[in-house]
Image (cartoon, rainbow, N blue to C red; front, top):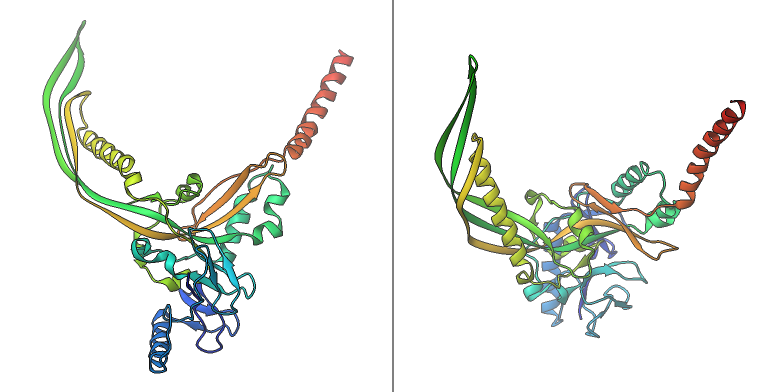
Length: 357
């Protein structure tokens, strides 16, 4: 399995994508480069290698020798990088350079689009601390400096679904009017034939495409803003981890289509307002021009294993919008301290009051 690193044209150090500038930063000489500059450098290097009769891989990198399916060689230092089957971008544990595992995102696994990180690590940590600061009974280990440093930026795989839905509704609407004249009360019911037809465009319904993901983690940070999508380019992965999908769109199609049809039917029903009651006799929703897309979207993640129950708790942050979701552990010792601090004084007051009575 071949590996790729993107190297600084100035000093040869590893480049990482910088969310703040939307450019590529060298951690060694602190230079910044745009994507066009890197592609020009890659083309120059490729032409030079071709003249020398050399074989290159990945454009801006050197490739390691093929090894086992879950291993690759770091192009920077030659160390073996071991990952699981779905990891597409990681770090070399020896030289700490970002490594992209080239073959994992080829062929049918090549993403159609990507949303680059807009929120950098510093911003992600600030958002996490602000979020955790409002939670009083969380174990201190959950937000210790060591724990916060383990926060990881990951591109998660998502399937995106778009279509048009042709819907129709037939029913009977009743408008009721009640009034009083003298001692008499009158009720008038007017019955109408209700007919609604329309087409609804559905775009970018996102679903988690990785089985090992906690669905609440990857779907809890939705939605992502479609205007942030860019054509996929390997270089956006540098400096972050990335996962390759292991779910096919067919596994999700039935549930997504049912959801889309239900939404279209609900919208048609909402359009038939103004009646005291509405009896639906027939309705239908037909899907047209269904399309599936595969994308990698940015998420900052942090996990914590409870020392007593062994349960995994998590924090997830949408790396584009800043939306937060998570499941928090509870420090029952701190809860007990609060209980005693409130209960014992009340008990003492009650006993004293009872004694004097």
